[in-house]
Image (spheres, rainbow, N blue to C red):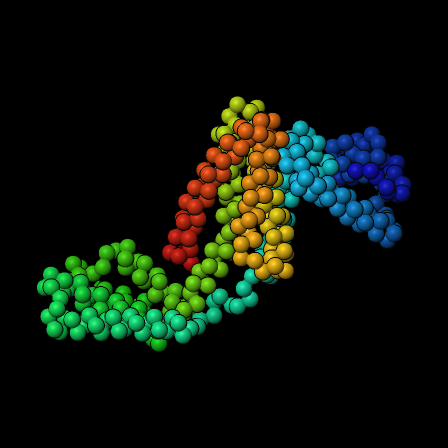
Length: 337
């Protein structure tokens, strides 16, 4: 960074920030400028614009290398050329923040946590009650095998609970019914847990529970992505074991690649506000994959064929890991949120 300050240097060569001796204008230990502490308002404004301009310059340079020179930003950073670029984690945090901010602004404006009962779901509830009545008639007419009588009665009670939306305590009623039955007539433990949790969410959100659950998953997505970054770096290390990179170097590549995905996603969301295309994000996966192949080729210095094959392997393993972590995350949200 070139100093444009016009403040006078202090005669005392002791740094006010760290106490070390200052040989020139800037301290060689902490980087603070050894100038007079009394500065005018003009100096304050001047420093403000210098810092903004310097940050914008680093940001634009980082974006240029990230978008138009796949893998080169990682290579430059690992080789020690860092002052001209933004720290990878800072860039990732800023980009992901903007991504999810725009996602929230361009998404569904309805309140996902407002309890409601739509006509379509109301018909589904009525169908459950009709099914319960039908099973009850079958019991009266003796059309149910004796061995299935207990399970049929259990099913009738469950259907009546699930088909009732007016009482808002269906989960409690369902649990009471299960507890009142002999152990051999109760549903399995995991079935009771799923039914109880489903009814609890329906009691709370009505037929809007699907939107509420989707919003909870979306809210946890940034945390999920941050957890997947180290996993992606680990895959890179596994696939490039002969490369003389430490794990942190692979992590930098992982951060840069995910930052590109977020930035590309921001462009996609802004473009989708004009096109309103349901297939846009599907087509965007093609340039993302090609970008990854070229980024691998340039950063790891391998042939295009090798980069293509290893990219396929890395992304396949990453997709499998993402699905597994996603299912675990959904289960935790369903079970405890």
